[in-house]
Length: 297
Image 1: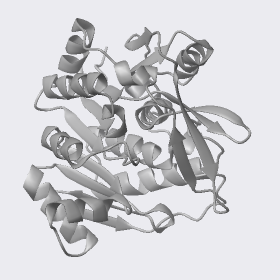
Image 2: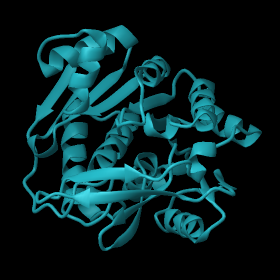
Image 3: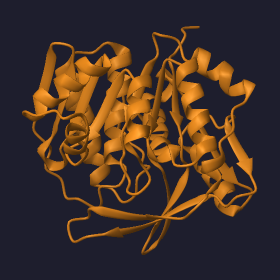
């Protein structure tokens, strides 16, 4: 049987509480669900996180399984499963208010995680999952324990006030692939004293931290994907926006699958843009994709 890549979403599990009710969320969870849905049986996708011993925790695990995500590395503890209260503006753009000290803040290091880290081909992590010291240490240990060939994707995912310059610096040191949006790029440019165009800033970040790839998402204006000397700068896809929650995570999932498959940079970027646009056209962050967007078909 052909070996398939193992992909890991590492960090927070949350319920996005919209005005009309809760929906499953959290950037690494969204990433995992999108990757599993897009890949089908061409990859095995794991979620590494923690949920509470409560109804929302049980529902989160059931939902992950329904999207084809492996849940053996979801820990359970006595804190409440994470929640974030979402408000949407007239354009469907989300703002967030996070509940304090959720189950995902207490993700603990185990031998089982050590084994998964040694076997994984790609891992996606961000800054929000590191707001608590326990989870931060576990995330750092996991990423550091992956092989040198593993794609270590930092999706910056800055959510004030739950990040610091120290966390960004430490995460960049661990990563070899960076994904950020057009709100986060200026923050990193200021942090490192970098000036220039978007692609010049991306190039300098890649050189400074020896990054294999840097992706910049620009909402309706498309995305830039830079992998070494290869640069793809493509326009967005016009859709009727339901909400933007999870679109960036879906982009990262599609990008990861394309990079693992060795596709050309333009092909990877266009597919990721199309996937993100489809998520924007749907309500909520975790969706099923039509056949023409799936990589395993």
